[in-house]
Image (cartoon, rainbow, N blue to C red; front, side):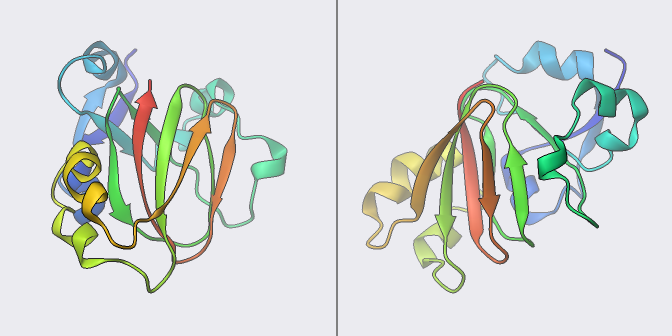
Amino acid sequence: GDTALKVFSPAQAALLDGQTSRILPLRNILSKLNGSQQIYVFDNDFFQNVSAKELAPIPDWLRMSNAKAFLTLGGPRSGTQFHAHGPAFLLLAAGKKRWYLHRPGHFPNASVAALHRAMTVFESKVLPNMKSPPLQCVQSAGDAIFVPDGWSHATINVEA
């Protein structure tokens, strides 16, 4: 309830690496997740807390040396725009999440034009008109996905 998490909009997540994030109590975040706001939590400090490690343990088979653990949390239709980073395993604890992935070097201009908008705009306005759409998959609770180094990817919560 009183645990504080970093919260920001999908555009901030993609473009600003959370630099304009706000720190809010978990209780406040959970009360707004089913509202009309597209709140998205991306907190790279969450798992430094001992009680958080107990609450959401990372399975041994997903542990990587020198890897960082991040918590992401969002309501229905929230997500994060296209971005890329090093290789990562991502485990979904609850709900369903749609993934969009571009191979390294295959990031269409149509995707770039929508980076400052919510993923719902990408899905409704950009994706239907793309000549070379990204790869897609749906991740369900308990599934882990591996995103290779340099693959740009975006997500949207299908179910919270």
